[in-house]
Length: 385
Image 1: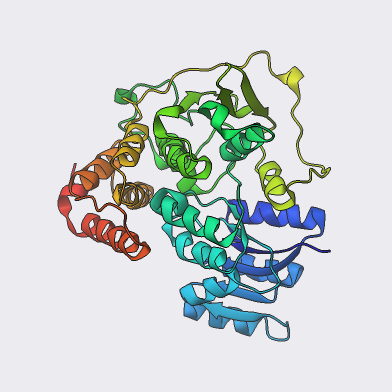
Image 2 (image 1 turned 180 degrees about the horizontal axis):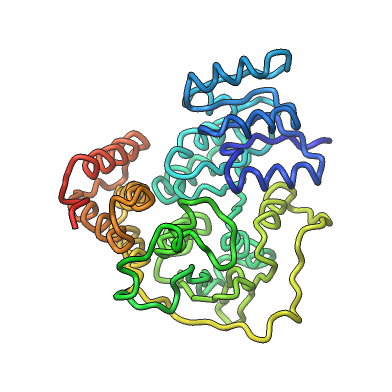
């Protein structure tokens, strides 16, 4: 039987690589959703012939509808359009790769409709981990991690008892600024921050890697994906990005997953599990590596990682505050409205201004997300140096 998927965020880095995998494995793509890149989305529609597509902007949907006249595809817009793409009846798996909290609602819609999730959107579990995992359990839905680190942990847990896990070790490249001290980062440019040494990623994720917030979000995500408490989740700097993460067991044995730094590998596993199918993607050449090195993270230079741990400890709505403030701060940095070191300052201030609500509903989380963004936008104390 042909596997059928939908992709939320089809024009982004993960979305386009998912289509590479679908092309290679002859997977049928039934639904595509994207934000503003309608030129690329049009090309994707013409190649993959989905039944439903969606964009957020209604005017863009009208343009696409005109361009695609004569092609049998339903063109929708807004969050309701994204929810339709996430709930197409004959789709088995929905790839959630929209950047940011925007992916939360359509991902929940997919879960409620019994779809397995190939999850590349960190923010879904960061902001609403308890709600999402609870709904997935209730509906009998599988959530397959697409992040290379969480895919690595998923693989290291195969065939083992989760009760025997002593700790999870998330590896981090350190980003483009690893080894620098805080006083060397005051004037770094957006272009410098976007130059990741190993991975090709979108702008927001690349900046998160440079601040190490990416790893902080992954810590929160790992807590919900694998049910491991925070005090047993560690971060280890591994600049070569060969070991994608590790699991240490109670007897001291450590399982590590290694591979080339290519996102198509965890994407394929998420779409084909439990099968491992051959491909022509990059393979790891051990002869090219004279050594693999490791170091503890520097949370003084990169305080975003510490802030993520703090947010998870505080719980409730605080991770949603962390996430929204980070998204807004990264946007301001990319627009050259704040400096690189202002990113953690903005996040910490937003967290300090928030009164945590425990056991929040989905509506509470969305409300807090909007509150944070509006507060940062209107309060000059966030942007002022």
